[in-house]
Image 1: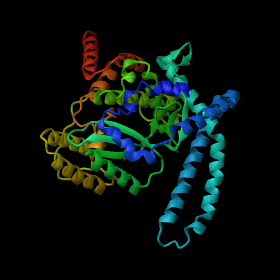
Image 2 (image 1 turned 60 degrees about the horizontal axis):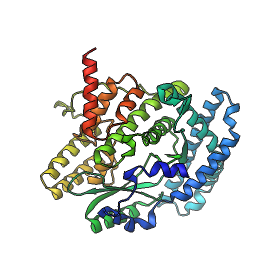
Image 3 (image 1 turned 120 degrees about the vertical axis):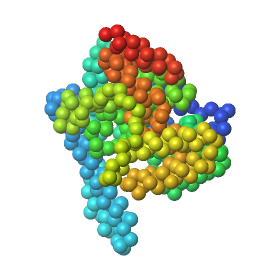
Image 4 (image 1 turned 90 degrees about the horizontal axis):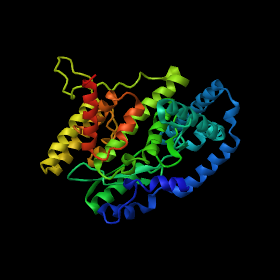
Length: 417
């Protein structure tokens, strides 16, 4: 618990500022805030009990890998059954959904009991596999990775994101309880918007860098390692200027999240390549590319390109807001949201808060729009001798100007041969 507090206190962006108008959001959302204290107590007790026994030490590498595969498959099967149960309950043609879903629910509960009994061991194996690769990439100290890799599969809180209406900037983020219904989210967002005069959005999370790191329960193994390494990088950066100043400025939000995304993607790929090669994607490619341009016109209508369309949307929204045309920007975003929905992308709300959140993850183009931070970090990784060299360069950065200086130094070294 003390370590958790020590990790969170330095992260300015995670502490509400009572002098800032967005602090009033806590008053509006107080009935839905996530209970971190209870979650931490339960997670740390469970971790301590498993560490005392450590059954993974008596398993071969092949047995450990198969155990994780079986665990993730078990989670996948549970989610499939839960989807079927939900379909029954939402089908108006089913007169008695409780009776109709009884067999499925019994099977789900049986599998859930098996999954819960195996969770701690699966987490320990996954932690060790990520740590082993991190150590080999240069992040180990005396053979140990510090801080330790510690994850916990859980039902993640959602996050209430606050942005001003006249610009895209994350000025507040508040963890809320898991399981809010759509109507509850809409009501809370509408209340925050009207009372504070801001743009808000409640978003799901894939992971959260408390300690142990919260990871969403998923049946997709590749994302487990990518998100696990992503959240560990946040833990690691906390002890350096970049992480210590997380959230002090919007630029530092984006730099932190993009660095963690680059590390998560590369370490996740490396873990899969070693332990689960059949699931490994192609290695990340950070070769510098020219800015995105519209595809050439052809007689045949091109397939809908989500990233290109979202990029174009963000660029035009920035232009409208810079011109002071707030209402026009909001109308435009709603029109664009309808376009995305028509093309199969179920975006519930597209507003300033949407871009303030998703634009912080700039390791790939799209929601960041014309923000230069993502391309700069991708190019810096390209010119770095290793992933560790990249992190060692960027962990001391506290502004975009410092990032540009670091990139220019790498360019000069590259040009000099």
